[in-house]
Image (cartoon, rainbow, N blue to C red; front, side, top):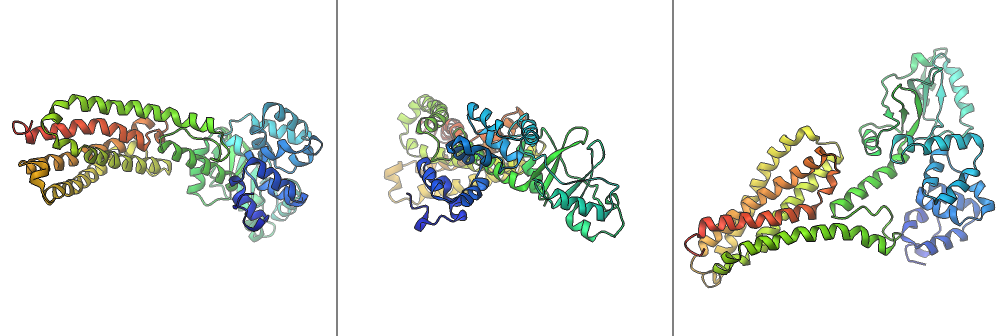
Length: 441
């Protein structure tokens, strides 16, 4: 067994922290060593993909008792991670009421509010007195409801009228009705709302749960903050993979098969490699200039990498700002203005460093020739232009992709660097020709 389970510590907290670091065989071995109570506690707290892994290895005669440990929304998540044959088998183990709820949840896309919600929640009628509401909630808490912290006030058509917390009920004036004490300033999400939008709603409000409604404000269920934690992690992981210049793995690193991982990484690498071929094409275009002034070739990696780095910085900042909702499409001009100043300032800083690097280098006359000052100016001004261009390209590309309906995260740092590499060569040799035309060129 790996050292991640230090000193054979099989506490629930340690197992949950280290479960994904174990191989499939090791997870199977550890699970078998636990007592039934510990097994159930672990099973309930694992993510749906690991629950599915355990469920598939459980003997058929015991599957019914295991799947019934879960709430309907968790059962739906589990089933979505099972193979087709096992899905049909799992559904047969459910009682009729739960089966109806689970099938309704499975009708929604996995990444929509309907696919994340739980249809079991605390309900109240507006005409109930506070005392009746408390007694009714006490009775409801004996069934499998997701949370008792909030109770949702519905009319006879199941339309959402308001929400009231348990604390507010206890503090309410005796004899008053639920309607008199409920909060009607509601924050809701639509049943077909995307999980990324839902996570932003949770981030903007300090709620433990948010109701899910349809277009007529009929309540369908609730999404709790623990449902969204996993969603946020998935979204962040997917974006990080894309920013790194690859397709999202969709599985933990140690669980994904080697062929699948190679396939997901190879596509982007091939695309970037083809992009870099244009760099070679640009180099060949300036081959005569390089032959005349070989000294210019010494600084190609320096100026090109600076443009790629500045572009990568900018695109990473903007992608993250978009993910957090800090900037929207309409903010492109404000971003452009800020990055114009930033890019120019950063270019001047690097340009001065490049200038001093040549002018203060020992033996500069021998190394760079008698026209070292013009070479230094060429490098310096090129850095200003390339860093400015890289910054603007990196910051505007996510806006362009969002505008045409693509994920801004696809404007990965390697992609921006490749783009700036090609155009940076053109800037470099154009600037060099302005200073060295008729002298070295």
